Structures are given as C-alpha cells and as structure tokens.
Length: 238
Image: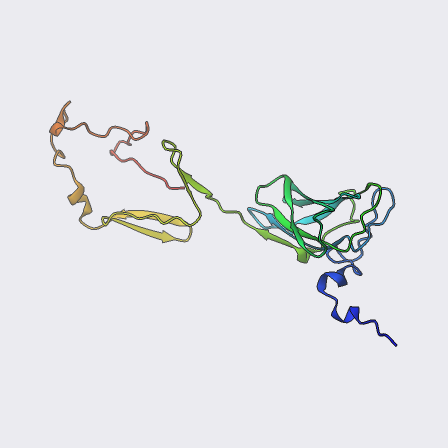
C-alpha cells in the first residue's frame, strides 16, 4: 500500500498555496468581477517602503494579476504617509520557474521602493485572464510581516560640476593636519588646530590694502559669495 508523503517534506512556499499568506488573514482575493484568484499564484512576497518619518505602518495591496498562455504579471501598490508607489513584475511562460523569487520593478513613486515576489505552480490558461483588485477595498492586502520600512540615505553622491565626475557609496574624506574634524550626533564640525591661524596667516595681514598688495590679489569672494562684515565666509557641508 503506497503512502502519500509529499506534505511531510513540503517547502515553505508549498504550504503557502493552502493559506492566506503572504496576504492578510481573511483576504478573499476576490477581484472586481467576483472571481477568486487561486492561492497558489502568489506564494511569497517581500517589499521595502521608504519613509522620512515613520509614524504609521505602510499598507501594501495587490492591484492586479494577469495570466495568459505566454506570461504572468502582477502589480502591487504601497500607500504610506500620503505617498503612493507601485511596482510590477512580468515573467514569460518560457522562462517561468515556480518558487523562484522575481524582482519587482518600480512603476511610479519613490525610487527607493522595491521588493520580490514568488509564484507557485501556475497553470497558464489558454485565454488571457486579468484579475483586478480595487485598491480602496481590502480583498488583497499584503500581510504586515512582509513589508519593511526604511529611511533612504540623505546624500546619494558627490558631483564635481566642472569635471562631471561623481563619488557614491562609502567615501572617505581626508583633511590636512591643520584641520580638526569632529562629530556630534548628525552634526559635523571643522576647526583649526591650536596655532594653525598663525601658521596660515598671510604676511600681508596688517598692511594697507592696495591694488597690488604683497604682489597677490586677495580673495574677495568664493563662487560669488562675499564675506560678512568681519571678513568671514562660512562653508556649510550638506
């Protein structure tokens, strides 16, 4: 007598074909025409939603699924702090593999939104079928554990406007031995070492100003910015 043992070794995504995950418990997956999307179409999903200030948790909903004999596609929409982003993925039937994560591509919204989706054992229909889900309803809300919130980096790259060269990623900034950098929280400060002012002081200090003082032209402005009444120009690093 043969014994059916497949469920004993079923992987995580196999089990998801029989339960609501990755959608919120109780989601019907009934589309706008009253049709129910099979649970084995979307078996796993993970998304990252950017936010400057985390006050509430983002809501992610599936808005559509398209199936045909040649492809499968799915669209998801996130709403957070009044901002909306949408992502989608399209996989051809020829290259499709079940239980393999596929990267979601941004359609609209923040450039930092992203995610992956995993499809189950899909039977590609002979005729195109499109399931649309009203975003104002709760028929296809993604489970909260599948959504993460992150704050995007404030500085993405440093650009030299003259040469066009840019730096991004982990960039190390070095200063001369006369400059002492310090950090307090998110504030960076630059100070001169003790005695540096005297070492850097021009020999022309104290002499009367003339058109050719000490044989050199004094600095009158930096990028069109002139000093204050005390002769200081403040540099702000953002």
